[in-house]
Length: 114
Length: 113
Image 1 (cartoon, rainbow over the protein chains, first blue to last red):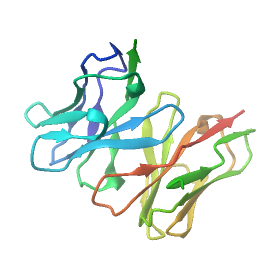
Image 2 (cartoon, rainbow over the protein chains, first blue to last red; image 1 turned 90 degrees about the vertical axis):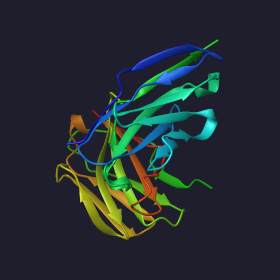
Image 3 (tube, each protein chain N blue to C red; image 1 turned 60 degrees about the vertical axis):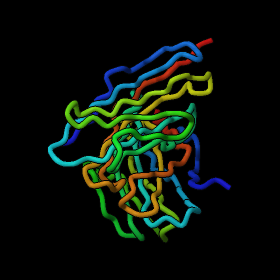
């Protein structure tokens, strides 16, 4: 069975500092990977996705992620965070590419401080 | 206009009651979903419908019954509510089943007392 692991439940960081949110997946087949963001009291919003092609994927709000097949990782990065980036970030994987098999990680709370 | 809208946003009820949550999407998507987010923010799919046809039914108690009157609506009815049903329920939709991009509603927070 496929699983998604987000090792850090909380990541505090100062504004304008870089950040990396870690995600590892386990799957015996090819997998499609996603990062979603959830702002307080809102639904999830897609940040970026990897389906195929270049392993470096750029998303909205200056975020990017790198697919590393050998390490089964898909870490999310931003070179300089803002207060407005404070939110819950979810990594998700899908062996089929379709949303109906999406497995989510447990989420990482990014807290940006002044 | 809200793309995926759910009502009600908050619902507080007693054990044993029956309640419904409604969802509508105005994106013209073919596929709609219900997800449950527990108190630890863990998200798990419950149901998925494609063009009014049920395509995913995870191991959810049969007290939960989804209904899709048309492809723009997917409602969730819950019978005999239990304490463990307390959670945030998210409706979502996608253009087709092969993009992985889901559009989520704002969630309906259900509290069972």
